[in-house]
Length: 183
Length: 409
View (tube, rainbow over the protein chains, first blue to last red):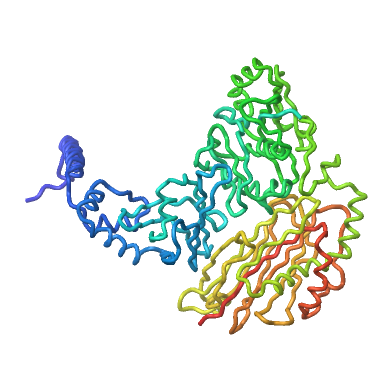
């Protein structure tokens, strides 16, 4: 024999609701504790980092990158498959600092600020204004961890960021060995 | 000449304009916080305020990209426009000061394309937030002036001089500024509209030259046939520059259906909208399943008289097919004109171009000459190129828009 909600009297229903709330609260508390326990980063974490603009580098994933250098290669492969655009590598003959990256759909330009030479405008020109603009930029330099940069909203087919010349974004984009992805 | 500090009144407190720098025209104008690499959220609005054809700074001071540093955050709204315009004028005269200055201007207000000063909200609150600064400036002996839109003048008297403004020209007079501008607007001559005598002379000029405006349309085609992007051209105008926005709506047949089904209401079409890019060019459209094109021109400024010429042609065509969509059509503020185009049947890419000729809605009317209306069925490029040479100094505003239609396969 089973007892249904409609078999309860009002007092019993009230008690049942109290128990439900209490159990929900215990679940929430336990869930929080379990989240903080160290766990291994899986493919899901890597994929989410590569594809979800809102997903930051979690401590778990950061630890995994530190322990397993091959993960960088895995991330690059995911980016190559999922990115909206991958800029061609800058020609090997190009030495030193890169001031622009040309692609057939996008172009990235670095323009020093005249107001402050230590600041640089990163200008991303969008070739197709019909397409949804990219939201994230990844800069992957050999021997370094791929860096993810959230992009501001595009205006008139252009995304513009003002950054310090010594920032990882600018240094990464200037590095002719770096691979750059837009997503 | 006396140096001037400019403070923008905000509900969070006064914000000082610290510095203006002319930047590389390839970047978008930004408002930055205190010299840091922090672009404030109002920067896109500042870019629109600066760059032609929407902006008034480039139109009046001749440069298209600036960085403006302020002492505190400005989060939203457009009431910074009056202070920013004055700061640009002072920068032009090398009189903009920061930290110390002989005169301090505290101001809030919007500025329209004709350089009229428009009312804003929350002025009492902004003045309240500025009391400490006003006292400090008084103690230091700084000549302090508050400039407000005429509609925002407080009813109560103030210890500080408050000057009502209707136009930027009045602000210039208060600050004893004679500003060299790229194309001096009519108000600088003491009137908000063009003087009649000048009106007539320009009208006479228009009468003979309106036809050649069409030339820009075609001549740019001739000149840039191999280029992928054309630039929207604005002929330097001594009149207020019309503010037109253009959008195209593509009507497409849904998957598995044809345009015939759409036309006979047997299938619900899909509508796609896009606005014009900075370069005056729409993104290319594929002709597959494209049933109709509807270009909408919205007047974001005061009333204008609009004429629209369209031309169609494929690469290498020596003769072009023109069509006059509108002939001196009055477009009121906020009104929209619609240009419907049937997609051509073609096996090669076709470029549609539109020449928007806009005139301020003034008493003296220009006429489209016979060479343009009625239009011949075809026009040679040579003829258009010939006419183009006469257009450079005309007092009208011309925008060219370009749209490439690509056949499938």
